[in-house]
Image 1 (cartoon, rainbow, N blue to C red):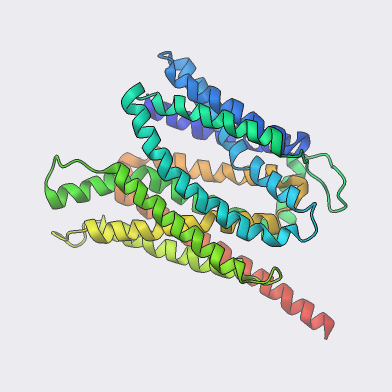
Image 2: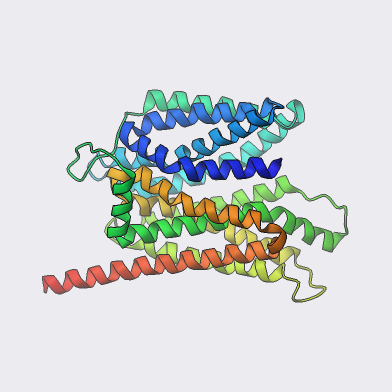
Length: 377
């Protein structure tokens, strides 16, 4: 049952993502964010039902809501910033601060969820989440101005999925940013599913079977690592000039470090060295990766604002969610064959390919700068 619900959510995100992205670009990013608040609330409340069809419908709605969450607010922010002279220059710093705040909120949310679960049962955290979803929707409704997709002249334009595919095919820089997004986030979701059994096995090996794993404490440490990564990104980008390629350079280093961290975890869980106590180095590897996650989100947000045109921002972001979800679901369906170590290996490979994609983007930028310099000379 759990696997069916899990797969339904990811399938819904992949299937409906481009459609809801197109709707957000066409009808307004504020409306799409409010729709997320409502749809996700319904999905959360569906967990109260004992009826399987209702639970599956809730997962479908949650998948649609996830597509809206990961495209509409960011598209709104970038679109609104572009209406202010010089507003785009501060997007990197804004993303860094926002995701640093996310990490702090996640730590607090974990504690609130634990309290809700202890008082209201397993569905308590879902019930509590609707309160914050509604509050977020209310804030957006009063504080945000609506914006829709616009072309380079600032005029509203009709958004189509076919045109979005054409834009990706014509501009390889968009394709490389999208590949980085899909590959890194796929690796991240695979990690989310595999770190609990990996750490549980390491704790059992060190302290004996039956010792409880402090999942809440580990999660809080992960979020602290994310906070560190986001803070580093904000510090680096705040000193960089808007015309520099600092984000591309730091993202390349971050991706290489994430690959190294995940590859180390893969090696440690392989059992190549019998009798090795892997708990502490494994946790260190995971902390390194989580710090990279903290750097990733403001990095990719800044890169998308730079390379993805506003005319099709929402739909393009969701198109790259299709290979992302396909890879995650494929690993999930093959987990009996792969095991924890194999899944982490897939995650390492995905991160390596994401690093290669970012290096390819940097190469394209470098070539363009050389051509520009030659033309001026």
